[in-house]
Length: 110
Image 1: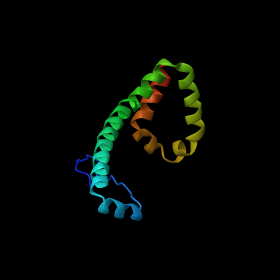
Image 2 (image 1 turned 135 degrees about the horizontal axis):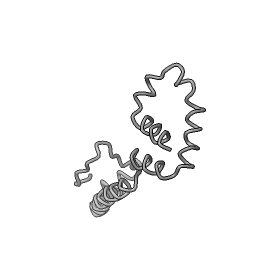
Image 3 (image 1 turned 135 degrees about the vertical axis):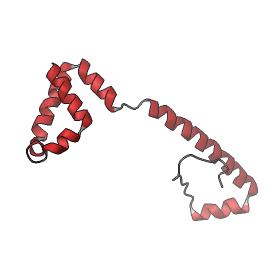
Image 4 (image 1 turned 180 degrees about the vertical axis):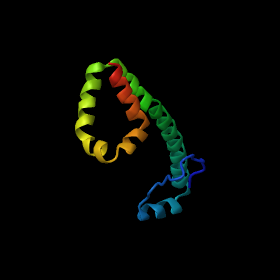
């Protein structure tokens, strides 16, 4: 039904079975629906790209924590409290967490 090639492997549009008959029986409705869905997919892809630019990544969070000591220390207390088991029994796992190690380094710097 869609003529537009989407970059998303798994995109599905579900239609009630009763409405499929309407589409098959009415070429004008079929064409209008196809055109609408093609435009919808294009608009959806543009919106996804816009929203992706708004996302924070690990480095953004570390930068924020570098600049906000109070928040950094509050988070450190939470980590210290909740990671005691991992620290005791699986310290190698913590050492492999690149961003956690960077966070600890920032905490040590003050």
